[in-house]
Structures are given as C-alpha cells and as structure tokens.
Image 1: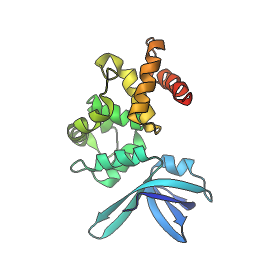
Image 2 (image 1 turned 120 degrees about the horizontal axis):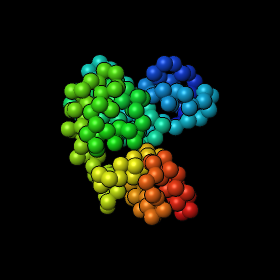
Image 3 (image 1 turned 45 degrees about the horizontal axis):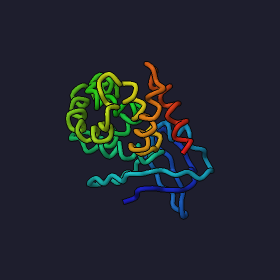
Image 4 (image 1 turned 90 degrees about the vertical axis):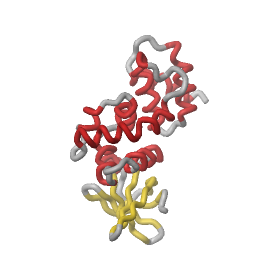
Length: 195
C-alpha cells in the first residue's frame, strides 16, 4: 500500500499529476484543488490510496490525511467507485460532505455529476453512522447548532483532531451569539493557536 508520497511535481494535466520521487514518476489522480495549489518543480506531499482492479492500478492523491480518509469512506459505499469518490471531493468541500451526510441532505450530494439522487441516498444510508462518530460528541451537534456542526467539520478538515476542534469550540461557544460557521471557525482557530 502506498499511503503517502513526498516528491516533486514534474507534470500537471487535467485530473492528474506526475510526482517524481526516488527517480520514479508516479501518475496520481488528484482533485482540482491539488492541481491548482501545487507548484511544479517544488517538493510536495500527497496522501494516497492505491486502487487495485483486475487489470488496472490507480493511485489517488489528496492534500490532507482527512481528504484521503473521506475518500476511503466514500468508496466503501456500494456502487461508489474511486472516480465518483474523487468527483465528490472535487465538487464539495469536506465540511459540506460531512454536513450533507450527517444532516441527510441528499440534494447537496446529488449535485455531483454522475452521482444522482440514488447514489446520494446510498452514501447517506451507509455512512450516516460512521461519520456520526466523528461529530456527535457533547452538545455541538444538537439541531439548533448547525453552524457549530459546520465549524467542527471545517476544523477537522483543516487537520485538527476531533478532540482539539471540539475543545476549542466549547471554549469559544460562550463568546458566540448567533454567528455563522465562518466566524465560529475564526474564533476557534485563534483559540487553537494559543496552545
């Protein structure tokens, strides 16, 4: 299994890059975000998932371990292949994906080309319990606190553990009065930087 690659991007094309490490160039399927934010001829790190099919090996790369883990979750759903999983991550942000699954918002997931309503329903059905483990601690997930849920997911997608994110949100919660998730995340990041 190839879980991470550190190397220099020597080629970018639509939907993939070639990253060279140890004299070997690996063709890696990536999101537009990776293509747009990675600089050619500079060292970069990709978190990867190797997909093995009968006659095909494909390497998928992500900018964070959280994205890679979400990709693994998505492709664990029946009838959701790696290309569809990549398309979901490419089209929606990580907080949007987690929030759509947690709040059963089929219409948000169905926006992804090639997924459709049935695919979105299948993802929600099969991943609902798996992702609730990430975001159901304390009272951050009560129905009146959607901005708090979104803020939690955003902090997790930035690489903070669920415990770190939750502690920061509980600390800043006292200062928050009907704010949107962006403002909540900003205050939580200030709190996290203090540590």
